[in-house]
Image (cartoon, rainbow, N blue to C red; front, top):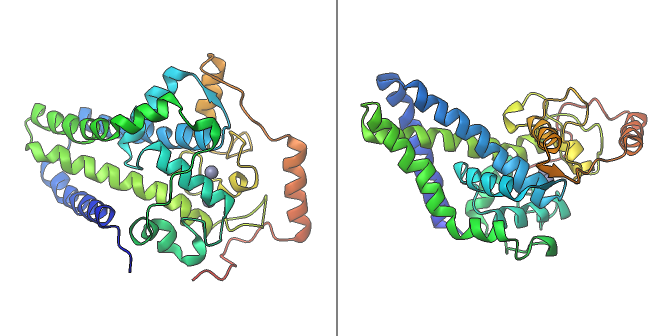
Length: 292
Ligand SMILES: [Zn+2]
Ligand SMILES: [Zn+2]
């Protein structure tokens, strides 16, 4: 059986350190600037994936200002989802082959396969970028500096904060591991949870679901809409849908930092929803596919 040992080691160590953070927190607590650092890291790192890797780069849903790209390319290292090149390439394969063999996180192979097993038990998918992203200066820059940035933001700064607040130096490391583990699992859950539980109001062609109760994904929980219309910069298409990434893109567009927002015409969205409603399949909340 194939095993990608570096990935296995990294995930095991990360989760052991994250587990150790719980008794640490119980004993030592956390200073508010440290807590703020990790909350901000969660949000900025999360947007690094949802806004930049996913919507702007993988799906070309919006064109961001170069400065914004550099900023979120840096922030994305808070999440340890690997350099953009690799993430985008795998993700494009996921959309092209959803629920089939060439889908790297094919849900038909089971919940845990889609969640994390694919990272350990399958060779790293070959990196293939669409033409528009080849030789992209920001992507190349991030690729060169990924690990330096990541160690600085996830190890050096948190340790410095711990020392600064008179706690054991390794406390910062544990807190960071806890945050990174939570973030990784939220990203993984979009591939697992959002392909198993929830509703399919826009397409029943694929397993992807809208999972309104999973707001931690910063808007990406509307995964059925996203698979139906992947290029739309909105995942929560209704105005009130909890999609902070959509709101951030709208805010950036207002101040001139984002342009060319791609929006599916409302007619097409309504037609998709009505077609499903006519089939009487929109309200299913349980998994109906024969997932392993
Ligand atoms: Zn998906
Ligand atoms: Zn996508």
